[in-house]
Each structure stands twice: as C-alpha cells, then as structure tokens.
Length: 424
Image (tube, rainbow, N blue to C red):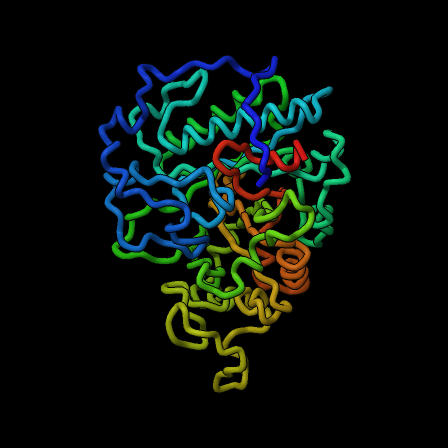
C-alpha cells in the first residue's frame, strides 16, 4: 500500500456528511454489540462456491457476522458465500475524470467501511438496515477497461484487462456488459444488502451513472442440516473442485503477487462476471440419468459418476460393461478439470438469479457467474474456450452479459480502494 495517507477531502459533488443518530450503530440498536465474538473476519471465513460454515449457523446469529473492510485483499473474494448479492456497474458521467473518480472512491470506501461494521452510512442513511447487524456484508470495487481512458490512466491499464475474446456460445447484451466501475455487494440479510446498494448508488452523485445492475441469491447459512456445497438452479451440487486457501498454489492462482505488474494491482485479482441464463424448461425435460451424464456427477450428492463421494477423485478412464466411458467425453465436469486445461483454475463465487418470466412463461433464471483469478488469460479464457468446443451443458445455458474488471488489493487503515492507482 502507498506510504502516503491523504485526508478524505470533500469535493463539490460529494454528499454532505450526516452523522448517525446519537452515534449509535445498527448493532448497538439491536443490542448485538456484545456479540462480536461470534463474528467471522475475512481471513477466518470459508472460501468460494464450495464454501459452507464450519458448523450449522442458527438464523438468529446471522446478523452478528462481520467481514473486515481493511486488509491485504478486498472483501468479497475469499469470504463464504452470502445469501443475497447485488452487482452494479457504473460509467463515469460526461466530463468526469480522474479527480471525480478519486473523490468517488474515497466516498465509496468510507461508506463501505462503516456499513460493513454495522454502522449507519456516513451521509443520508435511509434507515433500511437500522435493526440489523453487519450480516457478513462485503462491498468490493473494481475498474473496467474503459475506466483508464476516461481518467487519462491508459499507461496504468493492465494487459490482463484486455477485452475477452468472442465465444461461439455468447449472446451478449452490450447494455448489460462491461462498465467503467464495478461494485459487488453481498450479505446474509436482504435488507442489509439493499441498504448498501442504495448507499453506493447515492454516493455516486454526479460523478457516475448506473450502467447495469443485477440481483442474486444463495441458500442462507444454517438452512441445511449440515454444511454442504451449494446447489445451482439446475439442482446440481456445484463448486466441488473450487480452489481452497490450504492449496499451496491458491494465492498464485487467485491473486496478483505483491511484486506483480502493474504495481497498483499488488494483492489484487481479476474478476470475470457472466450472466448465464439456464434454459430450465429444456433441462427439466431430461431424465435424471441424462442430467447426470451432462454434468458427469450424481445429482443427489455431487459424487463423480465413476464412484465414491463428492470429493473423490474422478476416474476419467473408467468404462462400463459396453466399453463406454462412465464419465462422458463431453461431460461438463470432465472438460472443466484444471488438469485438462493446462492447470487453468479460478475461484468461483457466484449467485443464482431469477428475473421473472418471459411472455411465453419461460423463466429468466440462471447464474451470475463470478470467478476470480490472477490472470484471466490463464484462468477463465482457456476453460471457456474448451467449453465452447463441446461441453454437453452448452445447449442448456446461454451467456447473456459479460464483464472483466481489475480489482485492486485491499485498502490499509486510512486508505481508500484504488488509492495507489489514482494517486500514483
């Protein structure tokens, strides 16, 4: 992090500060301030799409969970899956540049720090989350390819942020793709998540305008009898092979090294965001056996078709009595294996979504696919290219929106996110 720490200057387009009533935090209003011993910091939380709490969590304790804003990495990357999520992209307003972007990231960082601590927003708090604790709220910020041209920082734009290649399965809506700035919000309470979304949108002021916004959800912690890997809207256990922090190469795969280039991205990551519609009407017409052949795993428990339990290594050479591979050659689980993609790996941390029904009754539902990697050219791209060439799942999904964003490392105490880029 930068050694110089500057005061958070108020600019002409910054909303005026308004202290919380009596300086009382949301947690204090609930009487949960003494329960902070139950809170999990980002470093202690389970990780990624396969993550689950260490033990079943009573719903009454959800509000006490707290993630840390300050740290080596931004929150919302290695934290456990959250029950509610919002993704929102902004474009800088016409005439806005580096100065306005700097003031905006200062405001956003100040707001995120307070809300993640269970406190009221620093200005204009709506009171929506007044009765709740932090509820494991995380707020994460990233920069899109176009941001650097808008702010005169083209020389600082990472090569890894070059636009993703076209894929044959893409049916992308440009209006719901990309953006100058990207914000991810996650929480275990829907009102807490919406409260943060509204605060971030209001903080944008005249500096930036909403380009697109998406809402997602996951199963609430404690909703199952025992911890288990998440399921997607196809009913499949999904995320079994996600990288784990205990893996010796986890940081290398997910985060830019401290000595990486550009320097302002040290300890940061690159996120690919894809809105993937699941063609559920077609999928649900398949028999259970056919669905399992498409995925390569049992639907009931996520175990590979070659046998064993969910975490059993898949035997790709095993054949049946007819000499056919038990795990089909075009099965999704076979194609996505890192050892079949030159070691390519990424940390998946998505949300499911449902945005109603088309006029013919077709559900607009699927996955807000979010994956983190140190370099998308070594993470997402090779895997997606392989899927594009023959994944059995492709006929049951449609990629409708896409974005790639550079997410810098976490802010140290007294800093704001992106300070090393904007003031470097």
